[in-house]
Length: 305
Image 1 (cartoon, rainbow, N blue to C red):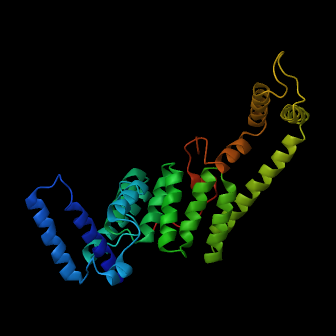
Image 2: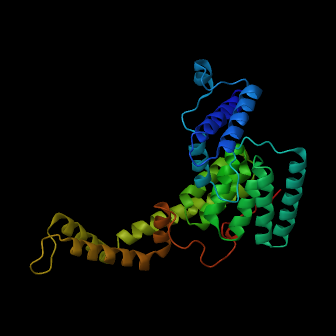
Image 3: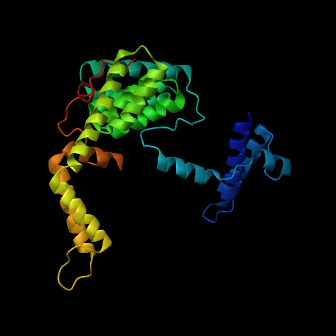
């Protein structure tokens, strides 16, 4: 009850602040004052009482909390931290929407499935399954960043949800972030040690990382790459050739050699370049061929619940 009283206390403070607004009519202010009296009476709170202030007052005002929440959550979602408890009727309707979404997934109508899961989330945003299933739909639509975000929401609700880790691994693989994928599959296996799909995907992620390391080593042994690196380091130290009249190690010279390095890496190992971009901010066009990320990663995980 303490959290509810904190909320009621914040609402009363907000309404009292509103009564000072010059834009409100006298009738509106009078209505607010009546509402304040009703809330104070219903919740036995007094915003002027020092003991109540110490017990119920929060650091931020209600309007700031509301605005920060609106800006941080997708418009189609309610926060998983919402105080709203779904009614039995809402839970029942949400479950029906989830089942409809599962049927759409089987029929490969992924956009329709996504809409069903989103509607289920609106009705019951405390159910981790709805977020995890929506993550599967996002992955099928090649929206892997959104899939990761939904998996994270599911895990905020249920930290022991192995399937959320598994699906997050699939999304990271589609983004060629094999290191993050490996960590997700490791956590999924910790929670579900007998799941062969997670074991297979973990082995694939580890193999991808080994291949990337070997390719990077091979690339650095390339004479052309070694020469460009030597030129780059020389320019950084001021010893490289520069245009006539230009300062040693000038920025233009450094940028030119840097561009040559990037071009050489792109030609030699485009997959490694994509992975590096991903590591530094999920860059590059993920899964450009539009294929099924679960097939690319050897996924054999269970369909949505």
